[in-house]
Length: 179
Image (cartoon, rainbow, N blue to C red; front, top):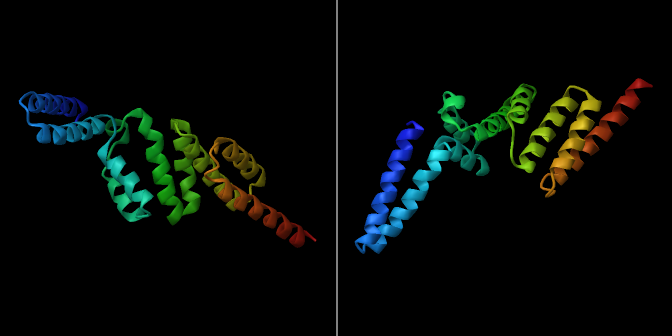
């Protein structure tokens, strides 16, 4: 459904809600307000994307992937602010299947833009994990530092510390094998 149709339907719902209050139907008017808010949210945010994010938060990756696949052309169906988040979710799903293949999604998400710092940190942390798997220590360290700077609320502090510890173990193993 195009955004113009959504705007028209949302506006009609808003007018109907105002009319309900005008004629004294307060109970139906309150329900109308909730429906109008929901309708206006879907004007700005794609409902498939919202449902996919909800399933992802519930750790139901299969359902999240199903809802993301319903978005056929993300450039047309999503507002530009959601393009990065679409690729971030695809990268997180792909990282559970084939971690090395998820790199392109995380890079695309960062290039399209993520507005929340903890999501930028998550993408950079995931890229650091891919760089570690590729034995590219310098890039992994750089990405970990960027992730640490982006994680202002310390939501990913434990994961960043764990990855740094793994990098330290990797160095010790390489030193042992190089003798």
